[in-house]
Each structure stands twice: as C-alpha cells, then as structure tokens.
Image (cartoon, rainbow, N blue to C red; front, side):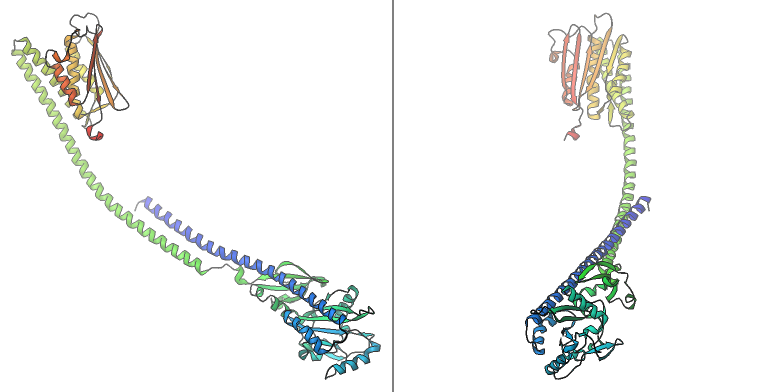
Length: 548
C-alpha cells in the first residue's frame, strides 16, 4: 500500500471522527443549553411566584382587616363563609384567623361571649416549653385566637394568646406601630395545630369610631407547604432554600436536607424578595441531572452512525483503490506492450527511410555513370536536374529517419543541409538562410523539398549568367500565428525577362513546382526586376487530420 493511500485513509478516518465528535458535542451542547435555559427560567419563575403569593397574602390580609373593621357582628359561620374562598386560593396556608385585643378588665366578658359562640369552651392559653399549652397568666392585654379557619383541625389553639410569645408579641407591636402588614421571622408553630416550621403574617385592625386597636388578622403558614405548593414545578428542577435576611440569614425553608438547616447552603443566590417589613433571600441549586453532562441517547446514536458511515466510506475507497490498482497494472502492461510495438515500428520506419535514402543515392550514382557515357549536352543537363531532385528527396528521407519521432522534418536544418549541398555545385554564390525553429509534417516535407530544390537550382542556373560581383541567394522562412509558413527565395541576379510567362517556360521545372504546390495547397507567387527575382511559397502547416 502506498504512503499516499495510507495518508488518504487516515485523513478520511480523522475527518469522520471529527464529524462524529462534533455531532456528539453539538447534540449534548444543545441539551446543556436547554438545561441552562430551564434552570434560568425555573429560578426566575420561583422568585416571581413567591412574590405573587406574598402579594396574595397582602390582599387577603387587607380584605380580612376591612371585613373586621366594618362588620358589626361576626359569628364563626360568617367568618368561615367569608374566609373559605381565600383558603382555596392561597398556596400552603395553614390557617386564617382573628385575635381581638382584650384588656385585662374585659377578660371575663370576652370569655362569656366566646362560650356563647361555640359549643365548647377554651380559656385564654399560652405556650410553655415550646410544646405545652397552659392557662395564660394574668397580663395587661391579651390577643386570643377567637375565629380560625379551618376550625376542626385547630380547636386546640382556640383561645391561644398571640401576645404571650416574645416573637409573636414583637410582630404584633410592629404592625400596630406601622399600621401595615408585618411578617414574622421563622417560628415554630403550635404543636396542637400540627406544629412545623413556618411564618406568620399579621395585620392590626382599628375601631372606626375610637381609633383604638380592635385586634389582629393573622395568616399562619407552614413554610414547607407554602414552598412545595407554590413552587411545585420548580422543585423538580431546583433545590431551593429561603432565608430571612432581616434576622441574619435565618433559614426559613430548604429541601436540601439537614446540611442546609444549620446555615445557608452553597446555592446560587438569585435575588431578594420583599415580604412586607422583611427581606427573604432565595437561593437555588440545580438538581444533578440538569448540571451533569447530558450524554443524550441521540448523541451516541449520531456518533455510532457517523463512525459506521466513515468505515463504509473507507471500505468503498479501498475497494475503488484496489480496482484502480488492478486497472493500472493492466494499463501499464498494455502501455509497455504498445511502447515496445511503437518502438519497433519507429525503428522499422527509420530503416525504411534510411534504405530509401540509400537507394536514391544509388540511383544518383547510376545516373553519374550514365552521364559519363553521354555526349548530348541536353541529356547530361536532364540527368543533372534529375540528380538534384533525387538528392533533395534523399536529403528529406535522411532528415526523417534522423528525427527522434520520425514524424516531421526540421525546416531550418533541412534548408541548411540543402544549401551545403548547393554550395558544392556553386561555390561562388553566397547563401543566406533565415528560418525559425519549426517542423514540417511528412505529407508536406517531400513536396516542399522538391519545390525549394527546384527554385534554388533554377536560380543558380539562370540568375547569374552575366552578373559580376557578389552573388547572393537568400532563403527566408517565417511562421505566422495562424500556422501559415511563408518561404521566400530571392536572388540578386538580372531578373526574369519582361515577357516571362511561367506557363510557357522552357523545361519542366515550373510545371513540377506548380504541381507540387497544388499537392500541398500552397500559394505560389513571384516578382522580378533588374535587381533580382523573388519567389514566394505560402502554405498551412496544419495537418489535414488535425484540421478535420
């Protein structure tokens, strides 16, 4: 296996692994973001709902206080009828009650009146040792619970003096002084009513005529019921603790267990809530399932499917590479066979051109032998012209088999060799050659060689008959951008006769030239004056097959 293939497989595998990990972390990241949003929404709702519930308490207290201020005669049945709707609307409320202000001198009258209201009689009581209720001792003023809803579950607290306990007394004094609703700090509720940890909301009520304190309205809350019912949905997401910041962060409620009872837990504080004259601080701690890494099922499915797809892709690439390797081996073998065959054909072709060149030279030598035995000047000239043409053709075949591909003839090299041959025949003539490095295909090489040879031979024979001085023959070839080759052969001889007609010229030279020009689709022109003659051949170097 090639190093490149190993690198390719490794890149594909790493790419698939990166995609699978990206999907894994992206899906779990979305779950994390969703959990984070859920936590933020739950904490915001928790604060809002507790604030709303406190607002409800305030509204109920104000309504109940107005009821006791403006209703002249209140019975237990009337109080129950009035307070029953509030009991169903307030979350976690344990009791809603009324405690009139009873000075010591009105104590006996209060007890008689209470005995007439109820079938049973409860004296004014007080709490000692945190769990024992006894007859209240003589005091200057009492605030005994007279009306309470629900009555059945709170019969044992009827007559309980709210003013007998220091905490409750402080809250009553606060509401009397401020004439506003006051919340108590965390208190232990009376065991006879079920006990528990909670708080009291108390509002003072005044006599509309005398302006004196008439009594107090109180709402009793067990904090665990208040929070669990108010924040039922939020407690599924958060562990919540509520602290009374007014009394030094005393714990009102926590669902974190015993570890949170002794002090504030390590939750994130989300804000303070004003509970009338007190400040409650809300702290929360997200449950473990909302803060731990999700490891969602979808993420593992995504990573599994991505890795499976990666291995399938690797298998497909490996199969394709194996097929390509087999195909490359077959192609390489076939290419080697074709190269060997082409090499053999090229060698055979070179051998043919070489033998043809040799045969042409033999033919030229035979003509030499024949020429020596001839006495007719015309016959000798005809043989010499034929030898020149044969030499031009032989030189073309020589250039063909010397070319590495045996497919073309280098025009510049051919003209140089042709002029070297002509120098031997006319040493006094100075040859000038200007030619770019271009190649002529085999279909045009032999006809063009004969055309050039015929024009040069004619010039050497006829252009310098009576010329003295320097004799120059110039061959210039140019190659245009559209593959048109222009070959000009010019001399500084005496020029052609004024009445020269190429079609009526003596000899067969111009006939050969015109026939060969038609063969290669060349344009043949000439011009002549006293300073010399210039012949021009223009043809396209594009092969017919390529043009087609």
